[in-house]
Length: 67
Image (cartoon, rainbow, N blue to C red; front, side, top):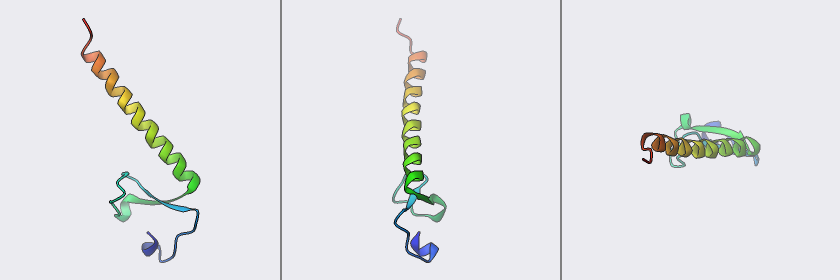
């Protein structure tokens, strides 16, 4: 990202990998954010994962009721 910007990143700048794959350094997968923004995005991604897992469990229970 620093090379793309042509400058060194500032101390508060974080490169966020949109698809969460830290090995995927394609520019369209990278986003420059602040510490606070990164903390919020990371929290939201974890919450989405948690809710997705809960949804899968509920769907399984609905499709496979205990008789």
